[in-house]
Image 1 (cartoon, rainbow, N blue to C red):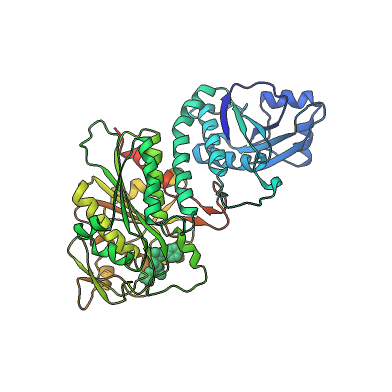
Image 2: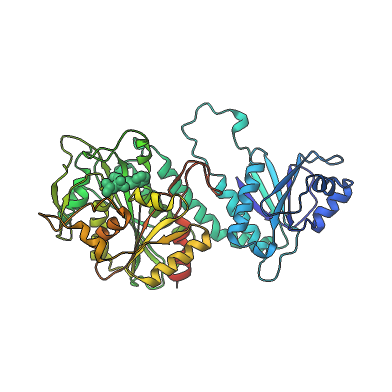
Length: 495
Ligand code: BES
Ligand code: MN
Ligand code: ZN
């Protein structure tokens, strides 16, 4: 789909959407149209009692005296509130209405108040359209033609098309990053396994990201017994992907390191999961998917920061060679772990990748993302991701970034009393706590592999996949985390 921006002008074909502010007063272009069509818009608004309420819409089909297919009015609500995410929502709603039209134009002819430029609003509407337009349909061979989106060209008319174009130039790359994440996360586990995932990250080299792939031999040399143990039952080789974007002026500035859990399929291993809903575990690599998508977004918008992305990629399978409950593994840190439950595998993978991150990169800040626990879904459902941090400022910055982009985080407590749960009779720790506060004991486990580094852990188990769809995504993979971390880096880490 081509999205472009233009000055406001008279339209003769396709579908036209006018934005209408709270109160229902039409802008100059819409008013002119209304007069020309003898009140087609004002009469429809009156009979539907539509007054520009936020996110409501009204469709007027084939208005007499024009060659237009449809005129749609979309409520903008209070234009003073029309900041980024509100504009994105309007774009997403507009997309749903125009997806099956080949050609559409959105007209923003209403006055915006001081501080909000029409061009910036237009660019975020475009961003919402783009995010909502994503579909993962490569495996459909028999889709009904009438179901398929047809929109090929969208023009957004506003007073400041040049501003809109410039602003969209930094929004589009983020959408491209999100699409990369959504592609990786939507793929089934027979297509995306550790080696095929890492092969796809090679594509980032085109954007200027340095990509290194470590296989099992290299990881064995590094002593990554915790990560490797998880992959023991799989015929697929475990992988570690290292992606580097050195965008800061000083290439030696300590980087932000982002680590993703990449369990390409989680059967639970010998501690096998029940069959109902097990297919969900194809997206247990969602954290790694976000890291890959974030690297694409940062590189494409040429972020002025040094960022390293690490993906720990494994497949957790039951097999004759699989690790058993009770096995003891030695992590890269030297600490030993009694694996009491092979289904608590994500933390084993992260233990080694977090250690590796600190040894090699001496990060300024380290953030991991993982679909780590079912318990975080019990606590927060799919409305927030769980946040854990050893630094209050970092927690505040991440929470603020989440609010800004509406990918919200809720911080959990941590502490000694939870850490005690991890005591093992025969090793330095076991990989599960008791039956309560499972997300916190998982975070405590990770913290045992964090040195003096400023660190946060995001448990994204509830937000990676949405069965019903969200405002900005169709049912399926959301890409939650890419916009959040992009915003965090933009606000706190760039030159
Ligand atoms: N990948 C799962 C967590 C998960 C569950 C993510 C449901 C998304 C939806 C993780 O590896 C896991 O199995 N965790 C266990 C930990 C338990 C064995 C301590 C869990 O949450 O039940
Ligand atoms: Mn598991
Ligand atoms: Zn898992």
